[in-house]
Image (cartoon, rainbow, N blue to C red; front, side, top):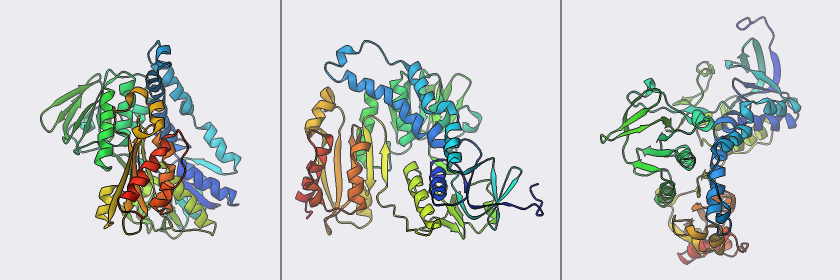
Amino acid sequence: MIGDDSVPREHFDTIVVGAGPAGEVVAGELAAGGQKVAVIERERVAGECSFWACMPSKTLLRPSELLTAARRAPGAAEAITGELNVTEALKWRDRMVSNWDDAGYATWLTDREIELVRGSARLVGDGGVDVEDRRLQADNIVIATGSKPALPPIDGLSETRFWTNREATGAHEIPDRLLVLGGGAVGVELAQAYARFGASVALIEGADRILPGEDPRLSAAIAAALKLDGVEIHTGVTASKVHGGEHEQRVVLADGTELRGNELLVATGRNPASDGLGLESLPVKLERGAIEVDKRLRAAPGIYAIGDVNAINMTTHTGKYQARLVAAEILGHGYDADYHAIPRVVYTDPNAFGVGHTPESAAADGIAVALGTGSVADTAASSIVRADWRDAVDEFLTLVGDQRTGRIVGAIAVGPHAADWMGQATLAVQTRTEASALARTIQPFPALSEVFTLAARDLVAHGQS
């Protein structure tokens, strides 16, 4: 059928290519707005995040986080008589990813009268999309195909067996020793998860510190937390060669050091998954595989690109934000994208959190920087939550202010469950709140969020109004 122009195309208002979180959201919003929508997916509905990334990785971190917290609390510690049951933890992970079965997610689409088309899509111009033996047509096409692992050009890597995030989050056995290439969010989260499951872990990062895109103090705090769990960290040195066999992998570092492990996890970033879509024949611009878009996420007339495939910010929450924006645009009440307050979270124990500017990026942007810092250890809640661990890791909140306006332009933090209590930092940056207003905000007692009062008062004292 494909290639036969005499065959009429099935018409939809919008076709969404990719059924990950961004694709699901935009399809749901458009269907709720009265549109006839089709979603094309070649793997699993709900995508990478639900089956091989966000959800399973955080599930793997949770059991050891709870056990570690209990062991630090007098009274609870005495009740702990056994070790972590890794088998049951992995079974819980399996349940959280529905045993890699997407039937429930597919039902979510069909319940909203969204047509699910399984297969690989190819855009053919003028709103046409070919998928397997079907020919589809739409007024609007939304590309939401996500990303894929970026593999570094290391000698021997292509001939060596290694893990990506998929194998690491889906494993059913814990290796005795795990080597991790890459000290970004994925690398450090999985390094901690496997170390707490009993593996010996070595992490290699070519930059001079892990989490190199964040503030040095944040990087140092998470490095200290990993070392408490026994993670061996190598920074400032790259891998020059990889080789190994069925049961052992070896990484040779540029300084001549050789590291050996049973498994090798390559967590060195991701690339947009834009190949194979037929974009070369369309008026769409690509930059290193990323689809270029404007402030309304338009890649070309009638074509939008959301989520990782546009590489603006490769996080699920950004993709879902862009999905809502594109749905609004297609339904006639659009608005320009605004990325100045995107949360950045690393779900280690403790969490690392950033939003808006770091001190360094603010200075580079010409902002007259003032900083206000509060120590989590100085809150009453810390002594309850952390008990005997208050001095082991530097847990803090730093607010980044603009001296000229008195407004908060960024925040960085390290602390237990910071992802949950740092929402007000995101709101402060998003709404350009003045430091003095946050300093006067009443925080609950005893709660870790009292650190906002400490940091905001410190920021006011350093020249904010």
